[in-house]
Length: 118
Image (cartoon, rainbow, N blue to C red):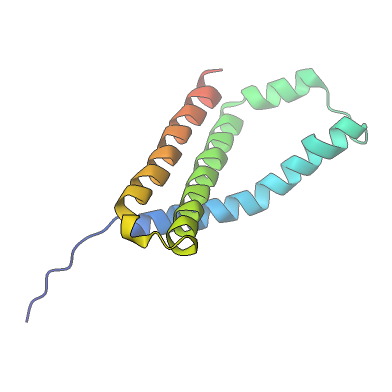
């Protein structure tokens, strides 16, 4: 017997979800601590010229773009399954998936545009 398996993009979304979770868990807490707490309190002094030079580095821009894109897809995947399972709206799976991943894709394009052009 031969059964035809329907290919689905779901594994790729799970890959983006897990990568986004890992990247967000490793980078965002230290960035929030550093730039949201320590720098404003004056515990850590950051020279604005040095920070600008670091952010203008192409490698830093690529890393920032990757963090933003992966975090957006992680959030989209989490939001999708929260809406579907938490609110019992699984019958609208296709619409919810298109909205969530579409928003993540548009947000990723916007983040890429901002990070890579400014």
